[in-house]
Image (cartoon, rainbow, N blue to C red; front, side):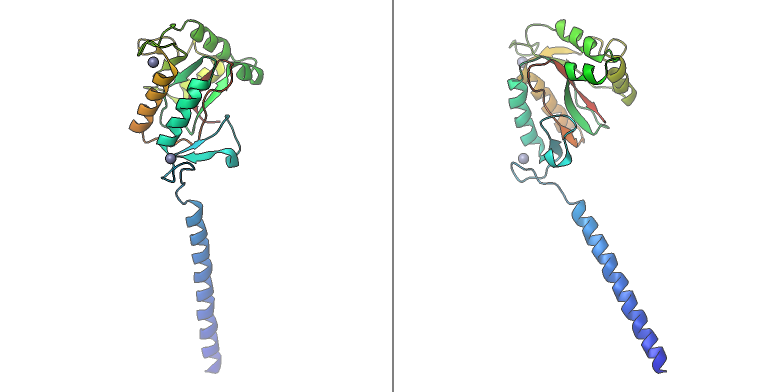
Length: 210
Ligand SMILES: [Zn+2]
Ligand SMILES: [Zn+2]
C-alpha cells in the first residue's frame, strides 16, 4: 500500500514537471513571436529598414509605415543617381535597391543592368505628376508574378514586365515616395527588409526574395 502511495506521488510529481517544462517552452515561443516595436516612435512596426540590401538581421531596424516613409522620403531625395522603381507588391519579403554596377559585377551574364540603364536613359526630364526634375522611372506592379521578377533579375527588362507601357511614368523623388506610401497603405504587405537608393550609381528597386 505504501508502495502504491509512493508511486502515485512520483507519478503526480512527474506530471507536474512535464507541465512546467511545457509552460516554459510555450512562454519562450511567445516571447520570440512578440510584436516588433517601431524604433523611432514606439508604435507597432510593420517593416524592417536597412541601409543596404541583404543586411544582417541585427542591422535591420523595425519601423512603422509612417516612420519608414519619412526615412524613404529623405533618402530618395538625397540619392543622386536615377532608378527604376517597381511599385511595392504582396508576396515578396523585400523591397530593396540594387545599383546596376553592383548587379553587373555579381551577375555578369544578366542583361538586367544594361536594360535598366536604357530605360533610365529614355526617361522624361520632368516629373509627369508635378513638373519637378524626374529622377525615377515608376513601373506599376499590377499583375506582377514571381516568375516575372525572376525573369527581370536574370534577363533584364526587354523581355519582361518593364517594357514601357501606358502606366509607367517618369517621376520626381517626392512623387515616387508618395506612390510607394499610398501602395503600402493599401496593401497588407509587411516587408522584412526595405532599403532606399543610395550613392550616385543608377539602379533599381524591386519587390523580391533573395
Ligand atoms: Zn514609427
Ligand atoms: Zn513630382
